[in-house]
Length: 190
Picture 1 (cartoon, rainbow, N blue to C red):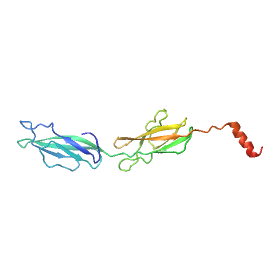
Picture 2 (picture 1 turned 180 degrees about the vertical axis):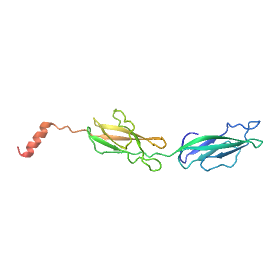
Picture 3 (picture 1 turned 45 degrees about the horizontal axis):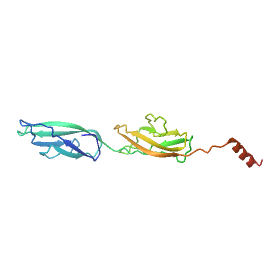
Picture 4 (picture 1 turned 45 degrees about the vertical axis):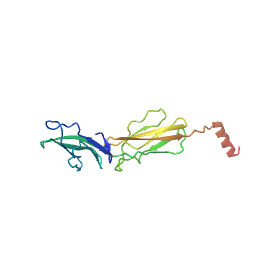
């Protein structure tokens, strides 16, 4: 089995097991490592869903041959929970201004905060290193639409998740210093 999410059906396969003189196993019994067991069956396959995340459950199959002799094999099954990824940004930002990105609402499946964040701001600048805090700032040099990508990593499980959002940076209105001086003179009555 591969890593699986909580409540996902995991298929276990003991069909390669060999028992007794003829190699055929007569009975298969499963202990999934979470307090759940199967009744004996003649089928080498079974399905199971785990309700809680855990680094590894030890799933054990017990096979029985035609003489009643048993043997055991096991597999370590990792079960993980979904990570919730979310971020906000400062609205209505023009080019050459700080944009504040905040991923504080991101959390693991149990509502606990995350501690690893990596940002790609979509403007050909190098993505950030892994940051240990959910807020960061970035300055866009040109107006445009940018695809911002946030990658988070759960420090408990190592699981990665990401979110991509489009960010629009407005153009900057350039002010001519002579126009600004004329405005001040007009206001002063001169």
